[in-house]
Image (tube, rainbow, N blue to C red; front, side, top):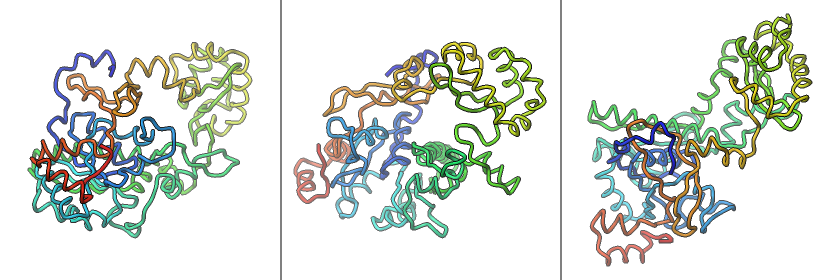
Length: 410
């Protein structure tokens, strides 16, 4: 794992070293949260159903070594314990682990963990320092608390899709699971805040994170547009509901994107890059509101200018401005800046050999991140956790496996 030059001198241990996490989550939001906790040094035990494990293990190709790319994206540096919490012995194993656990993360539908006897209300009296994070579609309370929900549905219900797409087209979801991703990252912050609060109070607590809440919170300035005006912002396609000029433009040999919504940036574009100072003083484009009102005319002028020179020349002139090439995933992931920042890493996978995975965006000046390990096989760490962690003998472990309490590939 490479790291930016500025943090290669970090010598202290990872900031969450010594923290144990029991991870009952699947798909994206929960696993992304616990993956970041693992990056920061937490000991994450991923609790999986012996019959198949995390649903994303069986997602469509591409896969490597029998593991789907989807699973590999969100589960590095974890241990896998495949145990059935519906069985009495399975529950006993989990309760033993909870004796030394700081954080529990789950994203079942509300009520499922209660069926296992592992909900927060059942556990807090026995484990008062436990920090318990629940991720659900609509929260633990409210009119839709018991409904399932996936990211694109929440994009639709929250109003996100109404903002996305061509102005003359239909609403469009974002290709990436933005709601899941933002929820996972917010979960990390909430857990770290709860850990800090625990140092003061000595008590754990329950954190209720809803995808719908996160989707609404992420509306940001678009939400305030509506709350301040009572009007729905219009879809702007590749542009922006207000910032102008912000858009995709085609140079002579390919597309570039720029976001230059302030007077200062617009002036620099016109004078330093386009060599058209007259556009700064054009009464149609004097202020942001003028440029928004006359956006079609301004975009037409810019299109005619940009298509006359190669993209490389324009981007060289725009080095001091927020502008860049429109790249494919391959171009981005193989780029110099991604390599320099250590955002693609290589790990040794137990069945696939060396594979490349995404790196971590976290960089501390003093604290190191954990050295990445490959996402685990289903049940890969059963024996290590049960035998060396809880003191089970070989006969007991074999019996648990025979009766289906534990299982997996390993």
